[in-house]
Image (cartoon, rainbow, N blue to C red; front, side, top):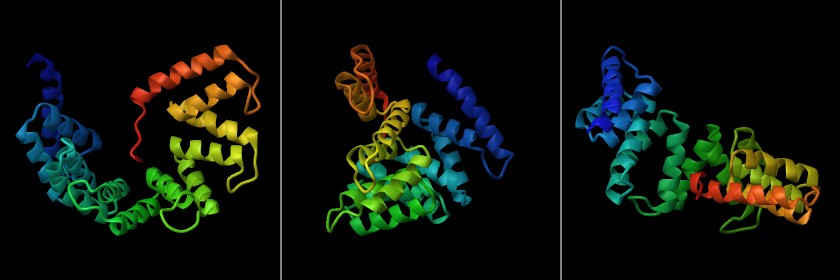
Amino acid sequence: MTSLLPLFLISAMALGLGACSNKPSQAQLDDTRQHAIFARDPAALQQLERWAAADDADAQRTLAETLAEPATPEAWRKARPWFERAARLGDAHSAFRLARIYAKGLGTPVNPALSEQWLVIAADRKQADARCLLGLHAKSPVNGKPDLARANHWFELAAEQGSAEAMFQLGIAYQDGIGVQRDIAKARDWYEKAARKEMPAALQTLAMAYENGDLGVKQDHIKASELFNLAAHAVHDFESELF
């Protein structure tokens, strides 16, 4: 019980502040969400519902994420309408969530057409993961021929917004000359940028480069070992919503 006390105090403060403001801050939403999930406080969930009912897209997304937390089919069924409401109000992340829900069949039948529709909407709203995923679709389409120029266009946009996966994909493109002129220096630069975000695949690629003296670096077994160790630890911590 004592371990929940700090969270309770923080959440109680958030609930109290929410009563004095029409629009909750993101900190209030996050604190209330944490209390609803970890303390299982129905009052916190009800507060999120009240905020969401006032057509606040941030509150609707937060409520949807709270409802989806158990990750069961029933949880996703409850969450999806709130993601839809938030997405229709312009929330880019909710649009991306819907794309993944319909792609994976989370609490609903798989619907590729709806998934693609929401994915394009999210990408148009500058959601980095959506842009990266469109790049992956263009690079390796289910039907039709790859459009490598389009793929790299989306990867570049996503990379500018900090997508580690997009940075890694650009590294591959420049290393192998996929849709761009082969440029080992640029490839290594993109791999290094992705590695700084602790992306396991990028760390492993650089580790192999130092192991074998590839990508324009001198062979360095100590450096390679360090990168392999970083990659092993990063596997447990790195999260991606793409796959």
